[in-house]
Length: 255
Image 1 (cartoon, rainbow, N blue to C red):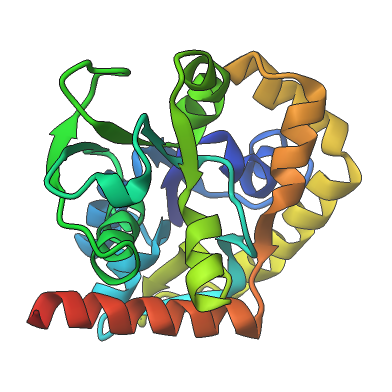
Image 2 (image 1 turned 180 degrees about the horizontal axis):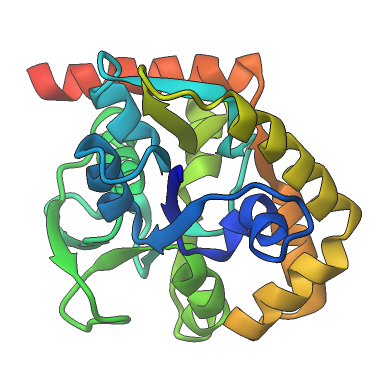
């Protein structure tokens, strides 16, 4: 049986809810974990297909192939990848920014925004605790970012959406994650079923919102907005943004 892995955040529900609830039949061994672990599991061939971070895909393009045009992208703000800060970003030079261990692409995006666009050199430290007082700013992703957003504002944090910042400087959409597999994997049937699953989810969005609400406690309205904000079907412009992202990663490596 084919093995499929993905992050456990609610933004993957439109892809996997129809499979897990047998709305769309595709027999597979599904597993969910934090993004960095899904990346590793695909590279080690512990899973056959993974919804992996775009940074991991770019780093391993010689081994992996992207499946069609499905993933997690944004044409502007994404809402679930935000820097919480009490200072303007340009005032974070030399300051300490906390980044989550679970993330790959989002951390790399933050680093290149700092270097190439905000023109600052902060110190990055890994953290697991929300609102650590010793940090000048910190990055949250996924469900935690969504649920902490209002609390953050109430504590006088400014929320800086990384996808929106990328868009404002590059005029390109951004890809956070995409489905990929090794070149020897036959993923044709999964690709076909994936489109059916996505079609089901957005024609039954109330079902998806209901499950997401159970997991996060967020309102129906905010969850509908979130799901409709994400680009699940990636366009040529998204992949142009991915190529540009890759070029900045290379610049960072050589500087």
